[in-house]
Length: 123
Image: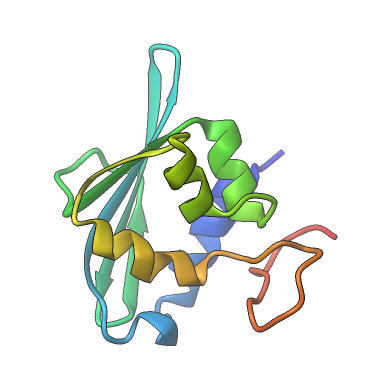
C-alpha cells in the first residue's frame, strides 16, 4: 500500500508544473526520520517546473519530520506550518521556501475554501 507522502510526491512529479509556484525557484529536501532510518524526498522547483526524486543531496531548505507527521501533512490532516510552529518539524536553510511550498499541500478534508486535494487521495 502506498502512503500519502509517496502519493503526494508522485502527483507533483506527474504534474511537472505548478502555477502556484510560478515565481518560486529552489530546492527543498524532506528528511523523514524514523529511528536510524531516514527517507529523503528532494523537490526541485524552477519557476513552477517541478522535479521530484528521492536523492539525499544538498538543498536550499531541509525539513525534518517523522513519516507519520508528514503523511498527515500530505493528506491534509495536519497543517505543515502549524506543525513547524509547535516544534514537531525542523527547518534549516531558507524558511521562505517552506512558506511558498506550503500552498501546494492539500487542506483539511473538512475545511472550506480554495485549497484543493491532490489526485489519488482516497476519500
